[in-house]
Image (cartoon, rainbow, N blue to C red; front, side, top):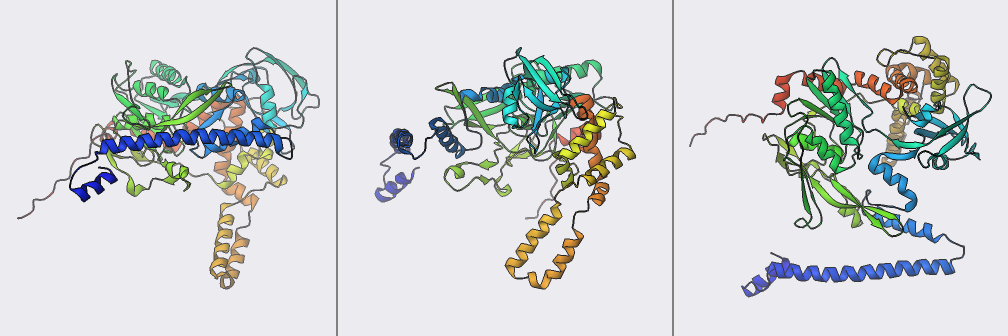
Length: 569
């Protein structure tokens, strides 16, 4: 019953205005207001651009100015609604297909504005042409890029597949530059960077995204593992997988559940007219193999559809950390002048009926800032077997797991040029190394790295120092600083970064980083992943679960109701 219906009913004792008629009238008025508002907004915006073009004191770029206005308008809605101009075609194609025309290498910009090859991808033109991490890009097709930006060089490296490209590069440790000529290709970034067997019989597949090749890549990996091994279980790793195409997520769920199962439902603004139910349609690959799905706080969107649907259907045990909580669906639509808009059109609901959207952007659109769903407001839903699950702003794992947190120092090392250069020097002086699972840095290697970083005066912040500064500021604000000044000064002296001490204190974590970075130079990303998976505590926990059928079955079973003693009346 609407507000006005209630008022009239109370006043006259009669139902004079039905809810339907009141809502219809309200909708018509709102449509009329929106239409006028739309015409008014377009008129004001167009007139403003015309006046600015004519009268602003300096000449202005109307195209750039209107783009800024459009981006700002869309940004006020949510982070996912975006405009792509005709110049952004490659960016949009990469988002949906994982493909672009180029050389197949990550590049990075140094503080001195030199651009280097950072990570040539396995099997791609850059690697096939002999480019190595650390090579400095001097020229691209005769154009000088000795001092440039990564964006400009990236644009020059991209191009039509099959087109010729000539690079002039300077290799570290060599006096003369190299001129390398090869051809660009269609670069298809695989969403399955690694798959293999853990132990003797546990399959493992890492899935990093959901482009239009995701399902085919997962299928290929799974069937290859099954054909070569008597698998007792499968670990599907969706950690740090930010999502992608919903159709690919449905296909992957279909690999492990029968045809006809509901996987996800999307509902637009008008839930009745804009509801779409997605079901599995194909014959599955395997409905019996035990599955563990790994997730973390960066697993989002399509990752949450896969993990959530398999959880709701009691087909897999979800392990790890609560996922991101993105329950919104985006659709791309064409605009004039070959533009495209990607806009949020619906929310999605997994089989138990829950929507796992974490952030409420409605309040952002009302000028109040986005709000996060508090745990106290989450609702209980049930899996097919009757297990309790919640719409907790993300997928809650059946078994919570955490990996060791990395010291702040390691994050600084990952982006430090001096550490990168030491790795480059190591590779130059070692023609070959042991296999990914057997490679190990020696004590002499680590001592060399430590001395190098000390010599270069490696600078980094420790979190403890930052937190102490916050506490000191708070003490000053609350008037307690004077009486605690000596304690603060003593703590400052104790917390001064000691590089030599920290390099030794955090050696296991630093060696792990160095090992992965070195393996990438010899065996590409595949080799580094093979090693990290072998040492991953969450992967070990998933392997242990799958090796224990009784425990696995118990996790997926409905908890037995506790018997209660009869009460006397």
